[in-house]
Image 1 (tube, rainbow, N blue to C red):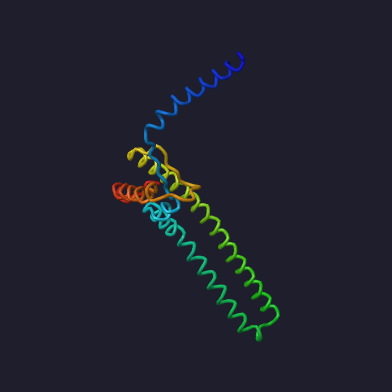
Image 2: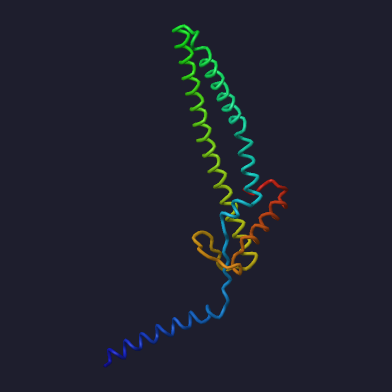
Length: 182
């Protein structure tokens, strides 16, 4: 009987302690917001500037690849047109030149794609860090207790603050003179 009272007393003490902790937390309202990160990454002016800078950075290499592709196509057409009148050595040399040019085009394309992917990932990482800072700054300024991003299956418009954060990002972008904050 004493053991039962002892356990009952412990249970009551734990219940009272939990009640004293939970009641104040329940009494204050918790402000929660949801942010759609992909929408911010797609629509933020900082993202558009970063992608435009990448495009400008890689445009000369892209033109070089297009020129090599055109050179390969022209040479291929010439060889196809003249193959009937070429000597054996001339034909072998032309075929070797075509293979070499094709390899060069393939190498240039592969290097271009690899370098572009590396730079895009680098810029995306910078943009994500900047976006996280923008969301945190907005949340603190607006008095949010919790902001949820990834993994949300549904959020009502009452808690979805994506548009508000986007407007804040645009305002911050304009305030920095379009220099970007990434």
